[in-house]
Image (cartoon, rainbow, N blue to C red):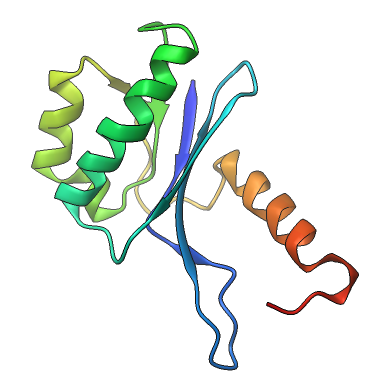
Length: 123
């Protein structure tokens, strides 16, 4: 299983700060794929991220014996994205519509955020 999170900014500050767009994935063996993305994501950019980051990451964790999990964001469910994943023989775990944020990668974002802002750091 490979869990993914993308297309949301994080580490955003209310008082005029910026944000960082990241894509990350992890698998059963604990390895993590992490990429910093430029600008808002759309289907073509998401497919590029998958090609440049997911596919090499998946190869490194054991080839084809895995499933991919992402949520129902429009760029994840677009025909272009579905066609790309089908062309790569990627099995996608079905995600229920209007589901809560129950993805395991949410824990990774929380851990990272706590580390960045520990000791009262302001960025």
